Length: 610
Ligand code: AGP
Image (cartoon, rainbow, N blue to C red; front, side, top):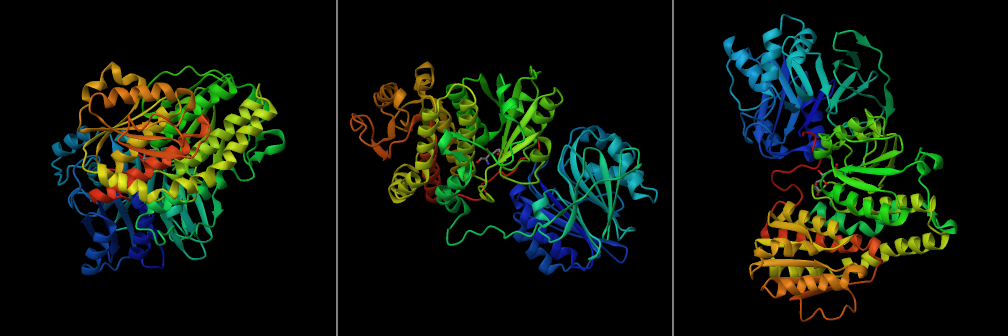
């Protein structure tokens, strides 16, 4: 997943593109580059590493160009390097291309072009696009691009320029986001992978659909279909100028976002609780009560942290609303041949709204007639345009790659949705009101968790040198264990696993010795006894045990090496405070190990490739 940006207009294209790239760095940050046209010549600059390195390179290599396209990379084909960084060029160095996505038949096309005597300098799949357009170019850039696209297989968001067309950027999309921005008065044209990177006032914005191609010039855009017939496309007026989230006084976005959770959870349920009736309502839920009542089965689709939220929601919807619900990993699901009937509701969870595996799985179930409810944190994202209705997290921009506040806001919104579905069915008003009271206690309770930061930091200091961790839990705490392990993996690069505590004796117990740390997530009253015996089994095999448990839990001292007591909360919502402890533990272990916390290696905030 990469970020592409382009600009044609009266302002400095280099400056505008660099600002755009910085908003796109969450999509990949292992190398970057920019190209533009000056007096009929193609000029470019590339750098390995973060966008800062490109800025430094540009300070030495001033490019005064009439338009520019730019790219920030997350390597798929070919290691992060100057050669593999985008833009890529044709054989004559007349055409530059920036690409987000994967050309699945790049090897076939590469061999075909090599037979034509065309040579290659990079290991990337994307270079083949520039070579192909160059191969077809006979003076008409749109025609050459269309010819190249017909031969390509895979998915792309791309932009193309040619030295002989200093006023034109060509952009194309298939299964990947491309947004065009225009302001006719200011004679400006933009292309970007993410609408929020446009960050401009008063822009006419349009999103390219699959196989549409746009020709962008100063303040004007024409869109064509695969046959190069012009398409009348609606644009929407958007004011996208938004304050770039800052870290404030925090050393990392992750710690800032962890500390925001009392407010973000409050925002997630603000104006959505109907205390008098012990139920919930959502401002932009377009599914009627009749639609919701007709639901007989729910499939939840998501990836990574969002999938863990989906697992917890599945238990809640079955427990509370008695609706058969399954959470599926989207990247697996889309290759199943799912059974979708008209009374199946699909819930797609995605913080960014751009995760390609989730989007593709949503398109798959929609092609089978399913109704899709999106749970998302980013307005105007692809998921919000694909879903029939979307519930927003209101968590504010989440910058750190390691998702924290979005996860607990997902759990809050999903808990409210499960309550709504349950109240529409068998749950009594009183039971609903009790559940709402528990929910409303969370912000204050999380302040108490955050107040234990120093204690958690000391624990992290004590255990940061261990290389293997297991997070164990039962029922609602099992997905919370998966999430705890994922946080530690993501930012401290330690091998950590989340596991159902009851499963350890069926194999993983073999891994237990004094070099293994087990974090016991004992937040569920219903399974407490079982959890304690499982931790006993770990202790008996010299494993190190850190127990997270409700205040006044007895018999822990003889089992656990270290204990962190948390305020009492109902089983259904315990994953929220217990996950925040795991977020802080992972954060402080990463601080001890000196890893790149906000932009961990090999990852990106939004995964737009398969
Ligand atoms: C979480 O910390 C990771 N960044 C990752 O697992 C993430 O949750 C996953 O890529 C899904 O992202 P989404 O919620 O934006 O779809």
